[in-house]
Image (cartoon, rainbow, N blue to C red; front, side):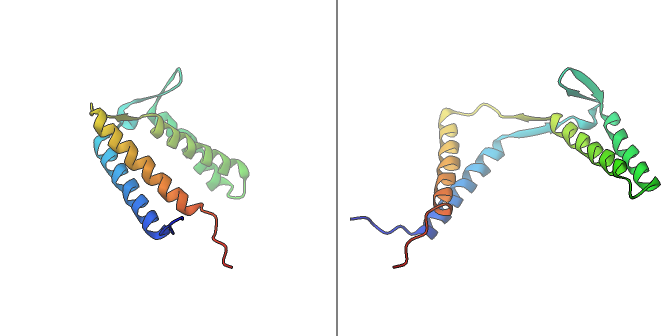
Length: 129
């Protein structure tokens, strides 16, 4: 005989597990960035961080010269994307030494909670006959 599942408690428990696991994991990670430190590396090319702003400035000037032109909007969008890519490329994540037990706790909380939440969210609807 199958027992009836309480989907609300299952969802809230999974969300609590997921939140606790992500909170504990994020407290261990140290994030640094060197965007304004001088150089950004895109593959094999070193680029000064100030150079990444030039396409954005050119795009803004083109928009002010002719607001209806597609080229100005395109250059501005590409300049913005270059800046975002440069910030992401210069970000570093450091995880200090942690024990295997801590890793297992983090993984069980994060992926177990995620599995519970996904199971409730993507469950097939019950037939109402």
